[in-house]
Length: 171
Length: 169
Image (cartoon, rainbow over all chains, first blue to last red; front, top):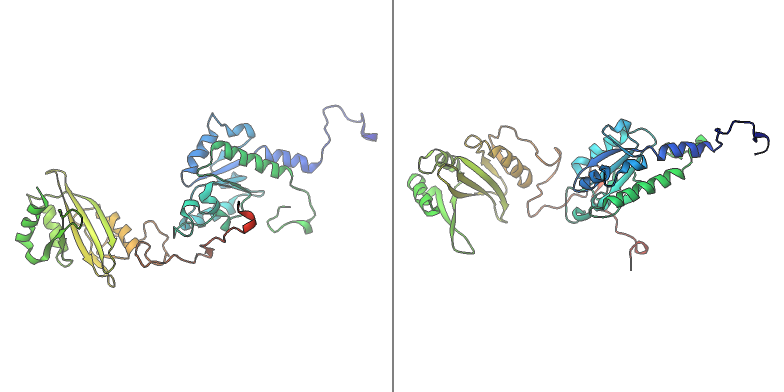
């Protein structure tokens, strides 16, 4: 460390600011629950004692204004689509979306050939970070989806020049 | 009481306005056909008559039968323990029906669903609106000639098929 060596007491830790911010973000994910169908029951299991999503720092949140992550669990109908979009727009940056189950991924059982009222994939309304496959996925699969999202957050750049920023405000 | 006895009781009062409907499969006599114009009187009679006393509308079923639309009233008497099916045909091109909500309050929600799914308008319904579909939905989904929308509120209905390199062999 050269000139910094022994200049500070031992409880001072050096790191990159990016990594410190990402570390905080990935380990305190407050997720907005959107139980639209049977996937919602699997998502409730994840919050219970057996699977315990809180050991990864994720806590359920009822208000979209306090949430970082939206878990879309279930069938998205055309009537629900505008509501989901509205909830997503209320979430503060940075915001992430997990699409859980076949219905939210692509329409699944109720895909465009068989149903007039189902949106064929929630990614047609809002940007999705992680897709969790399954019908419905096991709670372990959702936990794996959360860990995938955490890895994704850990690899993101926070401090970038304005001209390099994406449209959504994220790097 | 059996359906044949109901038929005799109704025929005595309404004459040509009702006709028997034989079940196509078993040849059983399970439903009674009613002309649309005298439907309201028949329903009121079924609810009020002391030997029929149908105090509960168990279900209302709307059917697209191709040439015409049909509605089945499934009546139940909880006090006398018997049931009856009444079948009414509706014109496909000008589907209008009297509302049954004055006789049984349960008809309000059944009629809302039939109205949005089959496009039958119920005259005198207290609160005509969409029940399950969005307010601005076009078309009647349970009709046989219904075609799925291409897009709704600029959300494309179809999803592009997976490219070949993304599918498993």
